[in-house]
Length: 387
Image 1 (cartoon, helix red, strand yellow):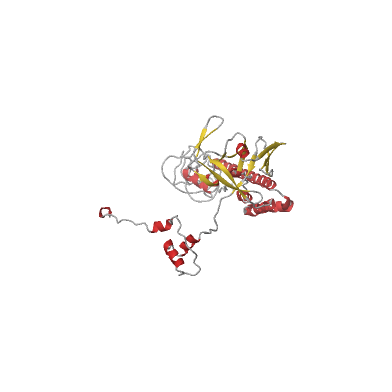
Image 2 (tube, helix red, strand yellow):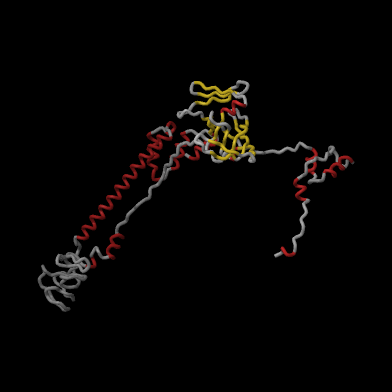
């Protein structure tokens, strides 16, 4: 919208349909279904920018809400998995029938030894470190870990190698969880039209002079003139010059606003109605409007009163540009044509008729700056100044 506002300020007319179509074409690929829904259900040519913005914002809020719910569900699932993991439910690695192995047993004595367990119902095999493990061996079968105590957390039901508080196990569990967290994507940015204060002038009866705070708006400026401007609260700001500003009228013609103070600290432009009256302009106020006429009683402008009871005039200022230069003095013209030949030489060529169609050359009183600069002599540098 910033580009659209700039184009409108430059005088180009842009319809809302063109802006709406451009926004729909610029959306991300994952919003294609939204674009299709808008194009099928609504008339794009009659849709305004505000309607499109509201529709896209509604879809964006719905999309963000679904993503938050999905992320919350993933966190709840992870919490349930951690709870089941702490319960100690796992598939065993035990012995089938009976097993032989080496290990520690509590209740049978400490030490290492070989033993055979013949009871098939109580035949158990464990792998890992902990108390209550009967043997260590290979085989198949299911067994209970209710009597196994962990060395890490001192709780029963699991081994230290399977304990959740073990740092290695925490890394493994995190690796099993894949989280997809996408950053929010800004697919619509809307900026309302802004009125540039550069061309806004306030018609003021309390101002003694025209005032402007922008240096680039002046066509001519006399910076030798200075002074102060006093406001109603007795505050004062400096005046850095006085000049004239080139403006463009609605009919395409150009005109100057003369005797304008350059006040750098001014944030707005002010037209003094008293100064306009001194120049012969007629000012008439009626029906919430201000009418400004020139000396011939021709209406120049009609300004409507704003909501805050002010008269604001929009004026387009112009920057003077030189696209073509013309030399009317024949003496200077031939001086330039002959590569800055001195005027006495040109006069000699003309008087002796040494050049055809060469007019009579008069020696002007003004000096040529380029000639003076080219003939300027410079003394040699002393030896002490050499490096």
